Length: 113
Picture 1 (tube, rainbow, N blue to C red):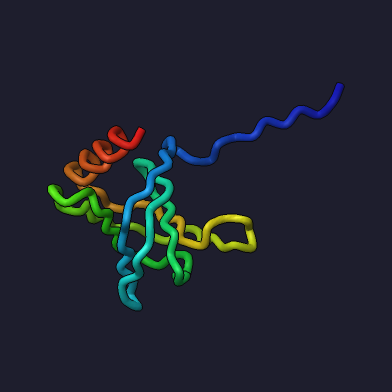
Picture 2 (picture 1 turned 180 degrees about the vertical axis):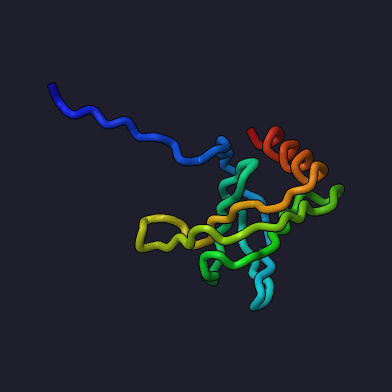
């Protein structure tokens, strides 16, 4: 009998592919990017500049002209690069979301799904 390996999804929340203009505020200053991947637990944002894993950041996602941007605190958990065959950018994990922030994030996810 052959060896059967099952690939497990490590993420706790389902991801949604999006394209949202964003700003990542880092200790070294703001970096413009685009959120490409979003879940209730985090996001992947393309950025031209890398930030060290573990760095606390603030992600601002623009939600259109008629709405205020969604601003969430996060921590860098992964730095993606073109060497891996991926977009260069930052994998972020949201931290300390308030009930309102979680609700607004869920609304963004629902409208994108």
